[in-house]
Amino acid sequence: MKTGYEFGLAGARLVARAAGTLWWAEAELLVVSDLHLGKSERIARRGGTLLPPYETADTLARLDAEIAALAPATVLCLGDSFDDLLAADLPEAEALWLARLMAGRRWIWIAGNHDPGPVGLGGAHLAEWREGPLTFRHIALPGAEPGEVSGHYHPKARITAQGQALSRPCFLIDGLRAILPAFGTYTGGLATTDPALDGLMDPGAVAVLTGSRAICLPMPRAARA
Image 1 (spheres, helix red, strand yellow):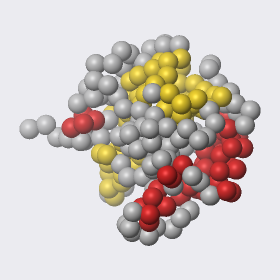
Image 2 (image 1 turned 90 degrees about the vertical axis):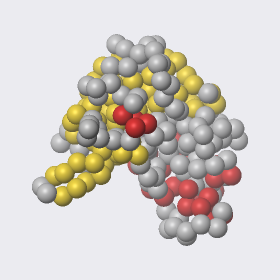
Image 3 (image 1 turned 180 degrees about the horizontal axis):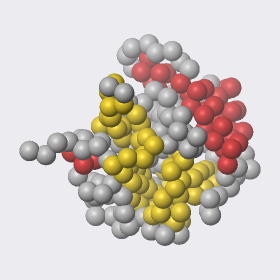
Image 4 (image 1 turned 60 degrees about the horizontal axis):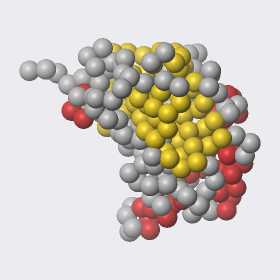
């Protein structure tokens, strides 16, 4: 089973993992984007649809599994780690779980548009971060230098397999940048055919679908007239 897709970006060798995380072995760095912890609580607080409040535990469990598998020295969260700032006030059991994951390693929170920064938690809180040839930020910048890694868009690829239409969260990768899928359990997605993504990615971009295994295919795009 292919648990990841290896690729190069600005000279760094990276792996887009089937779980939806990015692994840079040389730097012992695990990158995850758009956890949106506390989303069900935020929706209920604002009078929206009541969703089963299990998504934070599920997201933390999957992150826990990735940390256990890779033993990173640094974990970098690429923004929108919480669904809003109030959602960062996690229930005690989940707050302790997160604290255990953070213990003994460097933890970096990149500010997102939903959460300017969960400053009540430990770790470093930054607008963006540069390590070697790579720059990590929440939202991709048009015209950025090669080596940009971002999230925000929650990309999803729509494909047809065995006569059935499927939509899977995916990485988008070209020679300039990589955009990560949302890692949170209750997160929607933006189709790769959307002009916002189509315009960001080079013609040769690929999509790496997440799930039980990593599947790389040309980035699905809207049909041209």
